[in-house]
Amino acid sequence: MRPQRFNFAPWLFLAPFLGVFAVFTIWPLLRSFVLALQQTYGPGTTAWVGLRNFRFLATDPLFWTAAFNTLQYTLGSLLIQLPVALGLALLLNRRGLRGRGVLRLTFFAPSLVGLPFVAMLFAPIFEKRTGLLNASLHWFFPLWDPEFAWMSEYVMSALILAALWIYAGFNMVYFLAALQNVPGELLEAAAMDGAGPWQRFRHVILPEIAPVAGFVTLLSTIGSFQMFELSYILLNNGPGPENRGLTVMMYLYQTGFLTGDLGYASAIGWVLALTLMGIALFQRRLARRYENR
Image 1 (cartoon, helix red, strand yellow):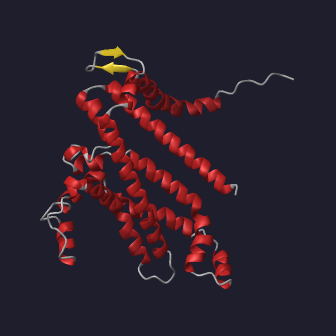
Image 2: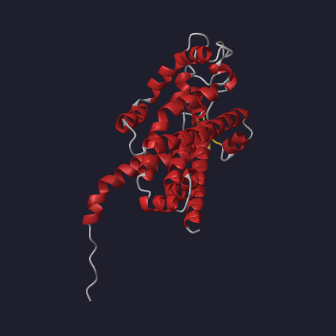
Image 3: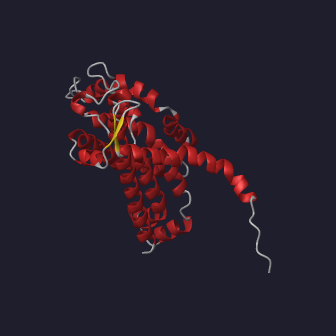
């Protein structure tokens, strides 16, 4: 039996992808890990500090402020944005609803707009007296204070509302696709057995869309942890009063590009990446456990 000759053809076709992947993914990862073990004093001066950046990060009050703000924004987005998206999907999935196509496009359209434009759009909306939000709330509810300071005292609430306008329709599309794949026979059988709308949703629809719901939750979590443009532009290129709008990504940007310490910024980036990796693995484990039930 003759030895099998090595086939170069597959590697020849893979070479462009492997080259791009190595240059733009593998090398930056390795370089950032080396930088995380150094302290930089400008573009040409570095000092090897080992794990000192990570030890300093564990006691850095600004980092923990940014982490708390990011977690607050993430939880607010998940607990408000995803139920709203699911509710819109349930509403627009109903047969016989007039103008379903127009409504779907209307709710999905904000996700096509860039985040910088959304930040510039919502900045005047959140103004104290002349802002559209305060003026509208004061008109409907006269007891509402028109001087309500969204961008001073309630920065995260303002960011969550702005993100709700952008991403609710985007996540709605995922839920709509999942709802349209729910077998109609199961819903009809549940209705014949006397199950009401809530029972059908809880025992039929929710288990069927659980994989998509888990994916949307993971996608929203990763996106929330990486939030930067919206808060940065909405807060006039800063963290807001008393760092109430400071996020992990904004702190990474300030440390790396404004302070110039790319080493500490790389350490922040690696902690963020490992955190997101841990969340993804935890969500995958929960999904497998749910599937094996």
